[in-house]
Image (cartoon, rainbow, N blue to C red; front, side, top):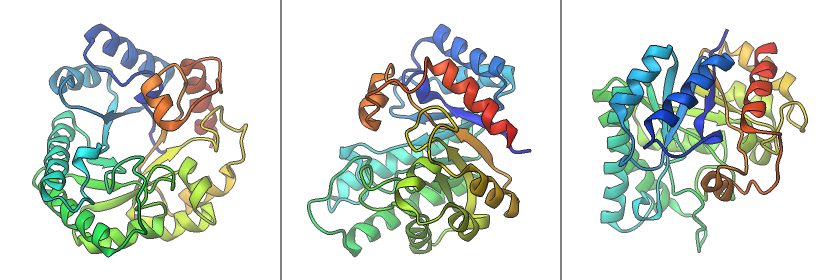
Length: 280
């Protein structure tokens, strides 16, 4: 059985309160999750050693993900901007290694939410590929993969589909670059869930699940039977991680456009989602 995890954005983006951190992780463990995914927005307030010790004591596996801000755009023509992105991702690789994650994942192939002012050309692809090649080589030193997540057109101008992710991986040319899929983004961008998963196959090492509206599971349009059939047929061994959001975490809600209440609470959404996923 695959491990089931949850993205901590459903509760917080802030890790500078030790007691709140412990409470969140204890809550996740009590619910019955096997793992957590922690997205890094900043490294300033992230106490890697403390969080590692808490997770180890609770026997929760941890996956680290990251995203890039405007001044770290690795698709930029500005070499200093690209270097800031490379340096940040290398630091995130080190954090991932120290906390016990086997990879660094995310949509860091480009800046989240950037709207390109012109048709995307080969230059942006080459900038991204060269930058991520450096990050991949850093990850190799720590025995880690970097895992690229295709996200929808409103959140990325570069990589929206699995086939585009495969194209960028080929350009990067490093064996430790893999793919993560997310059912929310697939609902918007892929032609077919089943065949997309089958096509990615062994490159798929991480899988996010959410309804098409990011709310309660099995109350949307996502074809879960086809999804889990495909995962079974490719003998998927990675984790299945819930990535649903609530309006109360305002920074995430604003970025992801979560304007209406889709469940009674974050805890309710997490518990019900876990029960639903484990049935499969």
